[in-house]
Length: 71
Image (cartoon, rainbow, N blue to C red):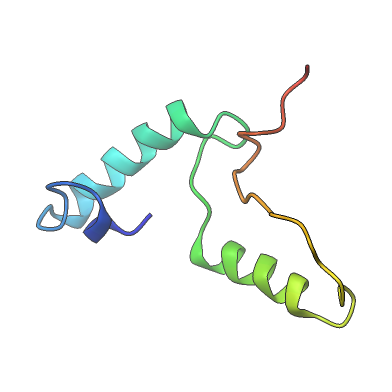
């Protein structure tokens, strides 16, 4: 989550941002309890763009387990 897209956080010191982001993730990303790193998002995108997946026709959610729940 880029802090420029969160209301009022664009001028917050990095230390405040890190605490806020960590607390937000604990409540909103129950699978891993943290937000994905830029490297994790990039790795996911590269896998989908690779020749191993030439026909990807689904919407993919990178949610750290948020949508993976027992029914």
